[in-house]
Image (cartoon, rainbow, N blue to C red; front, side, top):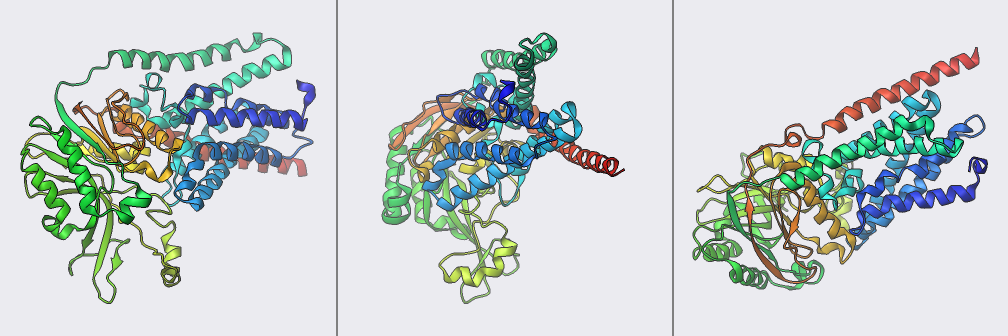
Length: 544
């Protein structure tokens, strides 16, 4: 094996193997445990170049790793093209580039700092890359963060209640590095006698979290305070019907027929999907909107009922109000208004509570780098577009029952990808979550299944029960252990009923968020600086 050195035939086999191992966990039939070995083929290639560093530059490592990460990204997020081809290309290119840069920086640090600091830099750089991609305001798309690969392994990741899904990144990398060290020792010497310490350590790093998770899963008990939910899945085609041909009156009839088939005197909540209401709804005059009046009429027969449902709404700013940065101007006047992807709670009172979606999809619901594109506004408008998207809400808020302590947090579609973001609802008092979404944009692809599985991570991280309503996709209940219950079929109208437990307890992750990512990002910066200093010192010595 060592004699193969840098033989390209073997390198391409290793690249193919690594690409496959990275891609599989995002498909529902495979486990995230595969990620424990996904980096190893790449680490073998990197080590070969490290051992021959006097005769080989670092650039081939960048190129080879880029190949792996492009294949991984295309394999798992190709379905974005069904909604936006440009968005799919951008997501693949940006994600692959950032991954490759993190791996390349590791290789450079490895060359300059040796094995110990070098392999530590991989953990620091990769965690930093994920954290930047997670928090970036204009480029964020953390779909392939390593922790998301375990979304189908809920019995093994109950410890996410402490670290969130981002805590799995250093975990996976440590396991890969330790296993690689053991394998490399065996490749070189045909024995692992000198690496027993690393072998024992990797076993402990794997077994301890998994053992805790299995015990926690078996022993976790939910509270006895329950609420009855009815979840609607109207299944209205977003491309051909919902926003094009089908009148809102007809859509409302479908929603109310589904609701009426399951709702009774014991029902506390009905949950409807994202943008279920979209008939020119002005928040300044909600009580006069035809769709809202239809819901109010339905509630009149069920006084204890609350309806939580998605809508597209608009808000007109008064003369004394300062428009939000994303506000639009009325044509021919000095007035401004904002457009929102929102959720609303309608009940027997005249108090309408609204939450505006805040984590917007880049390129679809918001334009990246608006300070640049705003200067192109006149040109873009001439082409039929706009430099303004939806207006977000700065802070999370909840939809509250005035007759009880129930507070519903409503992550809207893409928002459910972001763990620390969702904890914002819980910090505001949410004791149940209701995810409203429309997954039909991507067709019958892995996309809607992946988004559904991420909701299980949010349930574990926050220990909040979830009612998930999808216009098209999969609607379901999710308990506080992340189990998906009563999942509907894809692309069929459906309605389900069940009970969800409230929970007032705050998990460690809700309190502290992505603390591990912040810690390792700090070390990432320190390691980069250390690498630069070491390079300068080495260059100075070489000149002398």
